[in-house]
Length: 59
Image: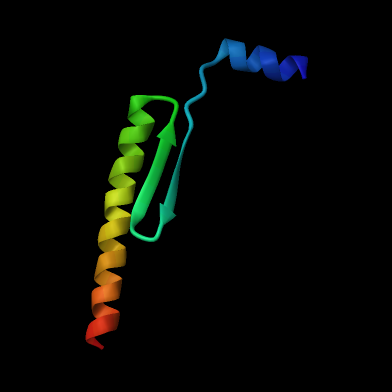
């Protein structure tokens, strides 16, 4: 436990998450760079999902 707290104090961790609820993204992160990357990823995923649903409906 002490080693973990020492590692956290010594180095700043960057983390974030993306939860897709259908077409709606929920994004959280510890810094702007991580959140910006996740926003781009969520836009790409929404475009892929939209294209998939259009193909399924047209076939």
